[in-house]
Every structure is written in C-alpha cells, then in structure tokens.
Image (tube, rainbow, N blue to C red; front, side, top):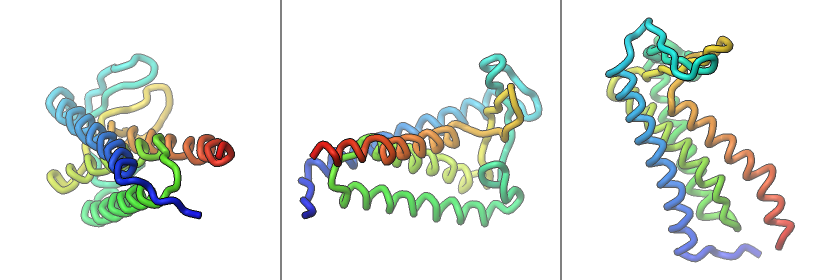
Length: 170
C-alpha cells in the first residue's frame, strides 16, 4: 500500500533539494569568478601542496575534455542531463515512500552544480576549470565537477546503506 506524503513533507524535501542546489550553484559561481580574476592560464599555483594546485584552463568539452571543440553539442547534452536529473529528483520527492535526506542533498548538489557549468556554457561557450591534483595525472576540474561527484556518492550511500535499513525498520 502506497501512502501519500503530506504537503509539509514534500515541501521540506523540496527545500532540502533546492537549498543544496542553490548552495552548489553559488559556491561554483563564486569559485569560478575568483579563478578568472586571480589565476592566469598556463601558470600553476600551489593550493594544497602535494595534493591540489590551481591550473586555469577553459574547457569546451565535457568531463575529461570529451567532446572538446564541440561546444554546441556538449551544451545540448548538458541541458538534457540537467533536465533529466531534475525530473528524476522531483519524481523521487513526490513518489518515494520515505524521505531520503542524503538523496535529496545529492540530487540538489548535482542539479545546482550542473546549472553552474551550464551557465558558463551559455555565457562563455566554455567552462572554467582550475583544480588539478598534483600527485597524479587527472583532468583539470572545477568546484561544480567535485560537487556533482559528491552528489552521486551521497545518492549511492542512500541507496546502498540507508534505504535498506529504513525499510527493514518498518
């Protein structure tokens, strides 16, 4: 038997998702504004020695620079991805039987951070990347990319470790 959620529970879950999304978007935008005003392309600057350094680049592609040089296609794919995740997140809020805080926070982070990258794609035609691991070779990324990964991890934790426990408790 499926129980309908109260409007208050739905509003609370939407507020969690929207709050996480807003924080992700703002944090991403502020970090990119800082990077563009304080870093120079081609000049590396230590941040956390032995772990992370700043290295400003502009990326017209997607993750790992896939699709580099094809900004319109990458923007269209990013729009579809973001819209799809937004629909998924809203559907989960309205249809999931139990509240799942980590899932809502994760979905919000993914949506807000994706919107941060989309904003740049529409305004600049490319995304500002400036974070680089200094201890191994990995593509340069930005705060939005890190927050998207964090959101995915939170959703996985919710599904693998917390949903089963809450279902067994009832």
